[in-house]
Image 1: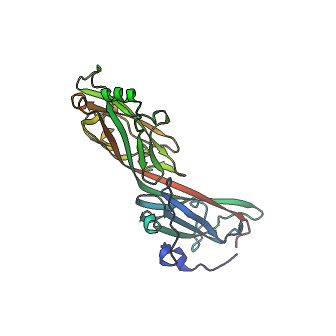
Image 2: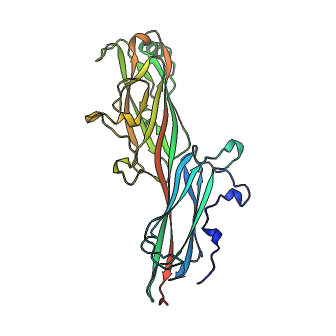
Image 3: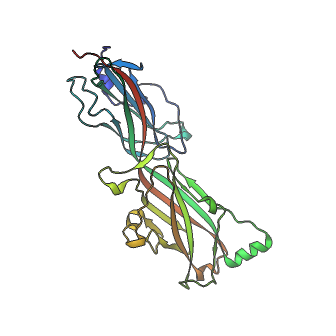
Length: 333
């Protein structure tokens, strides 16, 4: 099967430049998606020596900018051949998409969209053999999760009053920006509010320490990743966690013992049991126990209040799709 390939098909382009307005797609649990991965010709079988075009389209459908977006074809190197010279492709082939902005549903604007195409000749298969040739497209990108967690807080005296009157206390408020990484409160703690014990005994008579448990969850269809050259970067989360509220600060959260801003990069510089790199692996949840402390003297005169944690988390992520064509072997000329 022989056909001409127009040079323009090898270009990376923006769909909005060549067609009408795309529909606005928004996902709560995804960032960049591979909206299409196809081959031309689209028939199931091709002959050894024929050319095949691989067409990959990617779109940001999450809530924040996707940075350093890159699409890579795996399974081409060492098997498929250069269409011009006929030599075997010797290395992994990638294209950079730069930064893709998220959709703006309030303005009916879709997220940024990019597409790339490659042309290769099929692997050399001997006559009389038909074998599948599979190629994987993987889109890797840096993404950001903005999260907000708020607890109602009461002192011990106010809690006793509310028990007498039968009042209810609000459960935590959890909010996340759209994307594959989510902040959550474990199911065992979803009705939790914080009672500041201002009179009870503790290691430090000036502070009441509350063990706050939170989780990061991978809700997307892809997987966390990292710099392939640095094994300790796999699934690593960076960024900051800030605590807001009256007379409250971190106690022992990832090794940090005071202050109201926690830097995840700085927090892992401790030693021993305090040294913990926050890491997300595939679909696992990552629990974190973050102790926070309240000034007893201040909270004796504060019946109730709100304590909030604001998360600004960065991570690297990838999603993938595969296509397969059956290559019919023939005698090479």
